Amino acid sequence: MAHAQILEGKTAFITGAGSGIGRALAVGFAKYGADIILAGRNESKMIETQELITAQGQQTLITIVDVQKYEDFVRAFQAAKEKFGHIDILINNAGYSRLYPFTHPKCTQEILDNIVKTNAFGPMYGSHAILPFMVEQGGGTILSTGSIIIDHPSPGWTAYSMSKSSLVGFTECLATELSQKKINVNLIMPGIIRTPFLHGMKEELINSMNPMQPEELVDYFVFFATKKGAKLTGQLVNVEHIQTLIDQAADLPTDQRNWGGIKAMAEESLPKDVFKKIKKQRKLVNFILEP
Image (cartoon, rainbow, N blue to C red; front, side, top):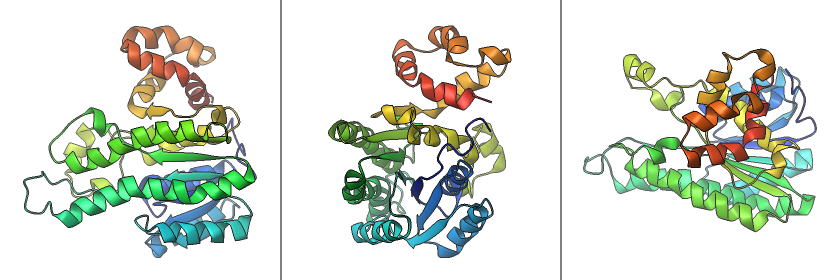
């Protein structure tokens, strides 16, 4: 692994760490040398994640956190600081959805509240509650899991899309606010990921959407916690666009599998506004492409 132990000495606080993307990020960050604070509501699931991390020799702490409750974050951050002395990375990953059309009788106020409070309030509460710790220690990294669904309107996704859309303005504004405090804030926006979120769907339908594995997202997040990535803030990372370039680069000679090697191809195949955004994220592309 080209970047082995690149996060050694750092701690990462990850919500929704019991399964899916959260578990993959927890295990992935541990492989890069970080100690992990697992946050979620299902303790038994987090214990399973914890075992995968401790097997790699990294330290962990399990915290019971309902991201809809601000006080849970405060308590968990204090416990994490007492154990590790610092919290370098916050990943707002916990998510919730029920894909009911707005006219469906099961699309109740309770469902709507849970979607918005988990997906929008959760990242806001977590980011706000951790700032006193990051400001005091002189910096940090805040990452949130978004979704490209906001660019692909579809029936049943209305409330979910609203909640994830809110993270765009949140990320850009908070990044501006914290730019002088050595805290970078970025949003990772994947497409369809093979997680428990897809349970109940027919396998044929899932395969037709060509889902990524959650482990494939790890480098997208890790990069922003590195020295090179810390210089980038306010970025909205469309994983689908970058992954298309990554897949195309696989056909190139090894010495051309970098931004320089795919730049012309990217400029030709992508809309101008998309290319400009990815050009700003070219160090991320290089990070992912390094063998």
